[in-house]
Length: 148
Ligand SMILES: [Zn+2]
Image (cartoon, rainbow, N blue to C red):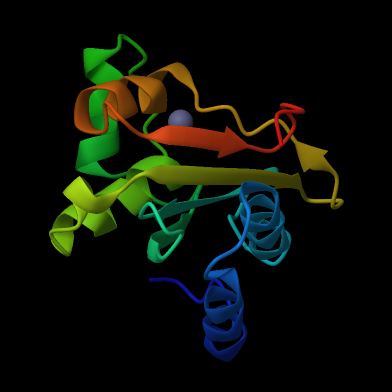
C-alpha cells in the first residue's frame, strides 16, 4: 500500500461507517476519495461491505501502478489500455485475499477530481465485467448518479 490515507483517520471513518445508510456510506467514501492521492486527475475510492454495511475492503485507484489482474480483465474486455489499477478491482483483489468475496453485498464507489469536485464514479466497462463475473449479486452505489 502507498501512503494513501492517514491510518488513524481511516480507522475512525470505518468505525463510523458501521450501520450507516447507503447515502451516508457513499458520503464517507467521498470523504476518503477527497483525501486519496491517486497520482492522477481522478481520485476514486471503492468500499465493499457485507449486508450490514460492515466494511470488508477499501481501496483507492492508482495511476502509478498497473496490475496483472487489471490488465487481464482489460484484455478480456477488449480495452487493453485500461491497465492502471482501478479502485474497484483493487478492492476486489483485497477481498479475495481475505476470503471475503462471498460476503460482499454492497459496493460504494466515490470519485473526486483534484480540485475537489464530485465526479461520476460509475464503473467503467472493464470493472463492470469483473463485477458481473465475480460479484453477480452485488448492489453498486456510486457518486454522480443521483441514485442516493
Ligand atoms: Zn474501472
